[in-house]
Image 1 (cartoon, helix red, strand yellow):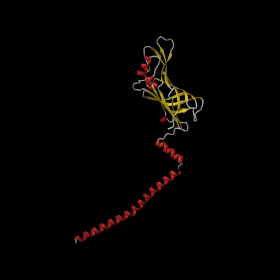
Image 2: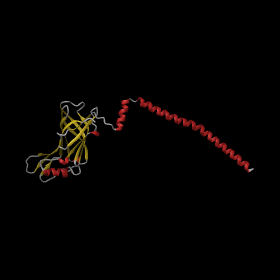
Image 3: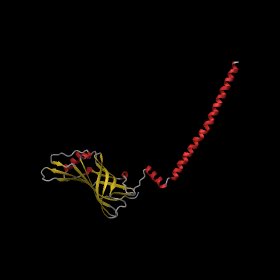
Image 4: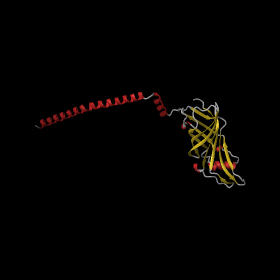
Length: 252
């Protein structure tokens, strides 16, 4: 008797399991089909959108992602004709009138690049000045500027990264003079600040020559204003000047 009951229960369980399996198959197969169809539809939509996007736009986007250079103009410093200097108004003991303390170096190198619209490409533009080689008319001043003011053992260079130009567009003039502004991030003794440079350039067919100048205070770059016995006073403004001679960069 008990054996018959057990067999009946087993049959019922198998029948219930079979019904559950059939229900699952009934709903899972359409669901899987929907998933596959949805994936195929999404891929088709992406392909259609790609096809509708203009090729030039796609290439520009791909170039931006890849970080490709789009420089239409690139100039580098020539082997000669470059210098950088500082000017600080000071009043020395024993002199009736103030004078400008001037230190200069010819160790200047740089490159500036712009795209076809004339916008500067900061990632490809940079000027570097070796301030450890600055020389003035007084060795005592040079030692003080290098050791106390600029700390050139730790910070031997001053750099300028151009970010934009105002008042100059492409194509560049083939001759004549032009004044414009160069904006860029100046790094002095490890501190970086935006600066504006007044530039006057003389254009020739194969080069451009000129001078760029800016000014800032000691506090702008967290530099302590000099205090030495032989100097009665030092103006708070530091002027920087760069004489440049730049030529088109060789084609890559």
